Amino acid sequence: MTLPTIASERDGDSTRIRISGEMLTQSLSAVESAFENIQPNGGDVTVDMSEVEALDTGGAWLIANMSRRYTEAGAKLAFHGLDPAYSALIDTVSQNIPKEVGTAEPPRGFVNWVEHIGEKTVGAWRDTLSILGFLGLTLHRLFRTAIMPWRLRRAALVSQMEEVGFKALPIVSLMGFLIGVVLAFQGATQLKQFGAEIFVVELISISVLRELGILLTAIIVAGRSGSAFTASIGSMKVQEEIDAMRTLGLDPIEVLVIPRVLALLIMLPILGFVADMAGLIGGALMSWIDLGVSPGMFITRLKENTGVWQLAVGMIKAPFFALVIGVIACWQAMQVKGSAESVGQRTTASVVQSIFMVIAIDALFSIFFSEVGV
Picture (cartoon, rainbow, N blue to C red):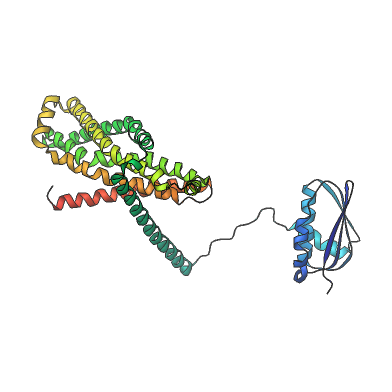
């Protein structure tokens, strides 16, 4: 067998390419890289195939692919010494080269489905272990900051408190007010049927103070601040700024994560309290308009029938919600790998997981407080 060869000569605007030997599939590895390395350019191109001893479909594909690249580059291509049979084969292959590279269909069937479920299960278990490790690392840094407060980056903490808390006050207040209005309106519609309109005060106060105020606040913070944490730290990960921090001897957890988690721990209870007050104001206003319950009567019944524990139950949940939102958002940011698309995917996952965990923790607290009689 004569191994195939290819050589290229350039003379001004003209290029001459010589192909020789047996262009057969089993021997194409000797010239495949050479074909790929030929850079197409404009001008006249002559392909001399007078010394080609044999040609099959594999060889024809290499020649047709090279010809297509030269044609797309604006060159005028001509073949010299080409056997008519080889010419017909090259034309047939050229007509059947796909214009777009297809994608393989995913495997189907029960076995592949089971394999996919297994991969997802193992991946979820690894993510669970990873996030638990990250939670432990964050708690360790928080404890170290508590006993060595001079390590805390106060400027970063204040900045994050402004972003998380102060700038979120309008949307949280509006949300709480509208929730109070909706509860009063819907509650009044039902209670009117039994002549028990006055109990709308208890309905609003217990629902807002105990559950809805802090829960919906945490969901808003997860969507607003949690996504911002993931996007900002994730972008730093893509740009290798976090690697640069480690090179400089800085701890990314201490520099980036602790200020954000502390800001959430401080501001989420405050935002929850603001949402509670806005909800009570909205409920009182709607009760006055729709039921004729005066503000004075609303406040009197609120004092008589709503204990301080209703507010305390909601406030107790706030630090747990804050810790979960902060840890999940920062952990997802640390999982970003190399592209802006990964930042978007991790940001979406951060919001979804944070909201899910907030609702799950709220359900656990509801069961716990019900069992202890609070």
